[in-house]
Length: 567
Image 1 (tube, rainbow, N blue to C red):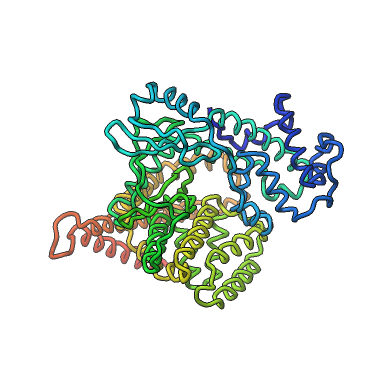
Image 2 (cartoon, one colour):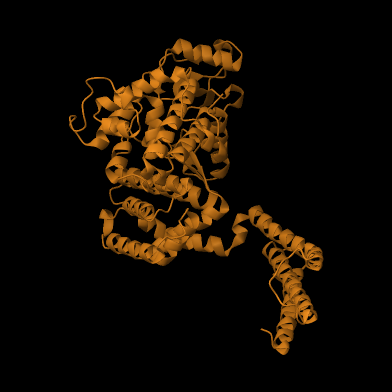
């Protein structure tokens, strides 16, 4: 069983005490932190009793504190390394020097024996290895904290890679997540200033992320979705998934016959520039058009095929943007290009979690200063990633919590800019966005680009209007009964109640009338967009008739309102 997803109630009820079996691991964590001279933090957490004698006092260990914290996480193993990697994108919560150190965290784990990999594959797939693969290389191609990858060949000779989960990694992660919950509870209890960044919430987010990464079915599904989304794009290739050789703990995919971008860049400058541009275009397409994107653009996760196509690997970390989030992201990018700090601030406040007391005017001023500062930097010295970092830090200063998916988007932009500039030192992310903005604007103005999704949203709007119209009489009748029984208590003097009832009737009639007009307009728009029904030339007659009827009804409604003197 993988680490479970906790609700807010589960988190609030989680105990601050550990089972006895976890105490040795807690003692090890305390020893590692103490050895790095972080005893003062242990004291604040009331864990000093576990600090061994002879531990160096605060200030006795040389080196920046952030670096010592990073070294401690690396010594504590895969769970804490992955947790630190997740925290490295939280620029809204932690100081810049801490973020910089956490960003350098690396998995340093040896491969596990191939005999264990063989046994796990046979157990998961229910057959002998020789019946599944014609060849299986004993030495792993790569090893990481959760799994390692072996090269193999199918019975028909197809070259594949087999990703095999580490034995007992689920149990280790589950135990360490319990310890992280325990430490988070101590933080919230004894370090009041830590509540600002919700330690329990961060651990829950980590537990959810780990649960997704441990299920290779999800990674395989992500890969197939990328295949569908990017079908027809000549610049990209996504490896095929062999579902009959895939389980929760084993993943078999086609092997890419290319070279890893992080290890071997093209020599030709023009080719490097082409690859950088192609990577940027593919990333923008994923973010703004699909709302489903690769969440870890590490150079090792991309290959360059002999025919020049880019190949994505490792789909364990992906981002998903709801339609509303996509609209916010498009708005932010357009506002950035237009240098509209006020629009950016309002979008950020709307999409984040902002306190009611947020100083909007001051937030706008700070955004304007940041925009002016970075737009003053010309050419290739300009860093789009630095602007993103500054915006996220500004939001944190005003206690605006940046949504997790937007943080992942920011991380992807930063990785994209870094990799693209390694390929092409003249790469300018802002110039790419400026060229892309017209497409973003047209996308919002032309709902038909979404195809069935646009129809679905329009239909949802129509059904909501219909439900509102259908329920209006019952709602008014129910309100009348409640008023008659005295269930609605209003401090009013009941004078000329008949006039009030007549006014309510007129208002409800006008509301119903306006809803009908709106429904006709939306329906006519859908008919016109998809060219349904008979036509006169290029004009759909049903859509045209609907617009004419709506115009006549709207004009009649406006004239009646003006004559009544109530408008």
